Image (cartoon, rainbow, N blue to C red; front, side, top):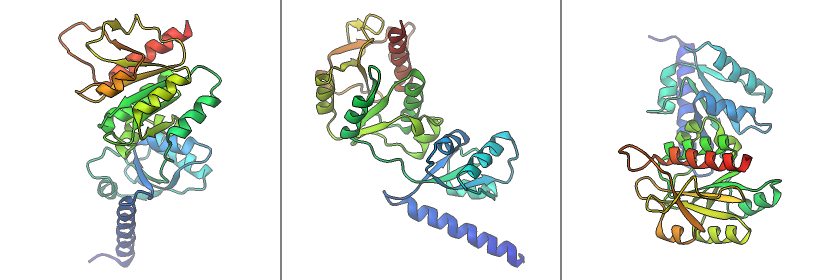
Length: 273
């Protein structure tokens, strides 16, 4: 027979889990973000999206202490709970003993993209993902894009991954800092970028120009395609140039997030010459 205080505590936890799940079914709800890097990054922003935090009572280390300290700056007091509760809140997720409830990242669209371009003090470097559907790949692409100095990642709204909890975790905080812009008509956006002086370079294994021969120094958008399919025909038709990554060995292609890193860092190298 359990004592009353323990029973009350379990009921409160159950209600909180149910509320979280109910809220998660709405497109306007708070998002669950998990993983130490993702939560720390969200807390480091001047105006944090985080509204509530749960931490495993099994963890007592410097990374957890850093989250607690960052949360206090925003007036937040994390809940210490059993790891099993975190497992139930984020099933099959590697939450690392930390889950946060956050207000959704605001949806950015075409108009936000062109306002961003107008405000940049330097030539833009953009990564465009044509229907990348795996949130792990999206998160990894966001991480590579931020590391290479890209100004935004662009993707179509349809048939492509959004910034899910998985993508946020894999991005290791990059998705909190780097604009992710979803557009309705990618081909039209490519044409509008060209009108603004942005050189649009697609990637395809059947191109005749290598990554290292392409001129990537000016205003630039690099386009990568979906897993296994590459960029779509209409997308390719609206590129100024198409290039390929020269490879040795037996591999036919690279994972899209790896290819994004290779292309973006070559562009960064050329721009820094």
